[in-house]
Length: 205
Image (spheres, rainbow, N blue to C red):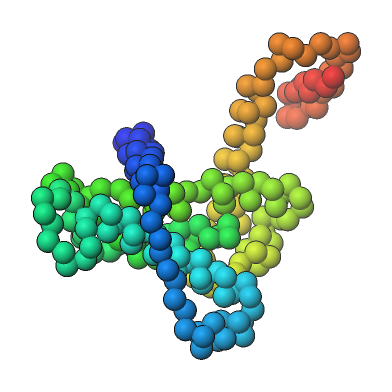
């Protein structure tokens, strides 16, 4: 089931990127001056965060219009139609933020939006967790150190720990898959650490 979801996710992202290549289009974010001034009172980061979230919504809406036609326009044989919204989340500045994602349906059920799948991806967040923890940020202190919005979630100690484990696994797999065929070793030193009566060897060269 998970693999099917991943395949559909990749197809949706590929379709969205193909659309951007063939028809870049334009979107426009209009923010009243009074709103900008109010947001700036809370800092530039706050203003940029909110503007980025609005832009993501506009990009998703643009993809919906491309797939289904303009809102209230006749379908003209299109197989896809708008189907309201549903709770979702995207990653902004390394934090998961909830939003209402647009839905589209075909005769076979819901269809994934490539833009949404792209923005909700955890890769960016996982890379940032790995980088920050490796630089000394504790998992317990992660939330208060980087939280920018009250509604952000997925920053608890346990959630960050889980992400760090996944990121560590990827790093280890990448390390194990390195091509060493062109590496000429002059010296191989093997060190070891004993833990629970087991001896683990650590080769260094």
